[in-house]
Length: 276
Length: 304
Image (cartoon, rainbow over all chains, first blue to last red; front, side, top):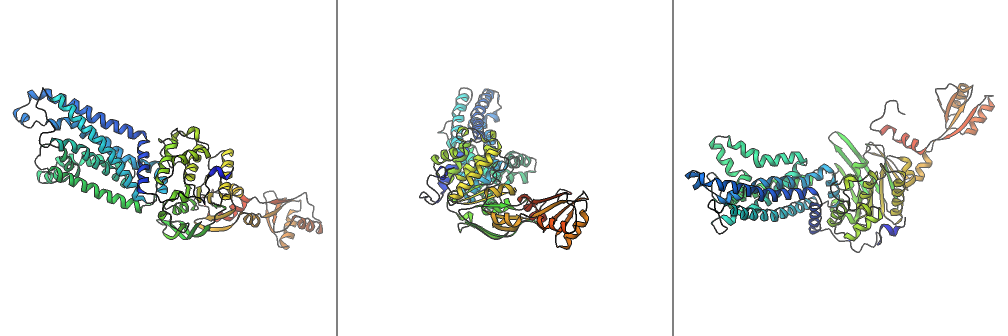
């Protein structure tokens, strides 16, 4: 075999040798994300559930509006109804976020990745950023689409909301922001726990199980837990109406961001120190 | 150039690598040889920054791997051909690795051609045979056109054609002046491929020598003799300073430390009848097993 076949330039003529940059790692992580089928399926589920389920719930509850009690009519929240699908679709984002790093651990790809990019913090940062941006874009599209479809189905049967109403644009746009932070949290959880099943279970616990358990606690315990539980607090950003024992939208979102930042910092430290 | 200084790796109470110092020079294929569990892979993982040494240090081109500004352009590595996401197409796998080090798409197509995978570039890697997977791993190692190459058991599971291809490739890479470190547990394979040998057992360096030197010094000769007076001949040989091993057949003995001609003379001098006199040359494989016998991690009962 001729040497020229291996490298037309030869090892000593590598004029193109330049330091690898964070931008390079971002491009690499984008390729990784778009080149596996799980990404396509998870985002498809997000879109279908987010918009479709929102539409079904909107149509059903709007038709039932006339039979609602007075207090039911007073607490009627058309934005909350049309965005109900988005709250379910977050499961797909959490699972995909966990998988995009933990599948590297289960397949062994992580070793190949860390040999290519030994500055490990860059891998985590690029992976989180790429997935958060993709989630944000998809999340905003789904959130606004669900809103318009839902309100169109509600109108004529019940009072509907418009983007100009107080707090509505913030609540709808908040859907994408909430999902983007959830995306970062999921990638960090996947990095921390490394096993797909363990990390998915942990995310489901954070999203559903622990808040559910909190409901069984006595009031004096339940109220602060519900108020400050990261995902509960963060989801206040997507609510038009402020409920009791809940933080205001932006402070609540801040609590979730802080929580994600802490988990990310732990994940970063462990990724850097553990043998891969 | 790879340089290890007093490398130690402990996992709990297990010492995987024990005070290993060596250097791997450019322009040669250096075989990293040892039985399974000797610490070859652990050492390679430390070279590549995957595992942190418990003590000591290892550098590539004077720098620790994790400090290399463009790692894939300086070091190409194949540790485990299955360490990839099976759902990704071969070309996308190489592309994401290339992009992380600012390597062009053109080079991705080029390495696919070099390893002969251009026809399956758009297939998902989980459908690949062992040999195809190995070729894909080698393609990834070649992406950055690196001056240093590290391969862990690259011929494992390959058919004779594939083995020949890898061997030729390794020789060609070294001939271009690159540093090539390749591990194996097969002495016979390394005898054909490597110019220099690093032999390790139980995490310790046993030999650091050229392949020729190793072959010469370790090809132990012995003489196989069949004689109705084997016991008497054995006694005469022992008197003359040779080592004699009796076989299960009482007429057969194995003599080391004495040439066959000398054994013949000794027999004639004492009127001993010989029915067979055969000089036996120990294979390199046997020499290697002899060398690493004490350091094999798991030994089959009764194996010698």
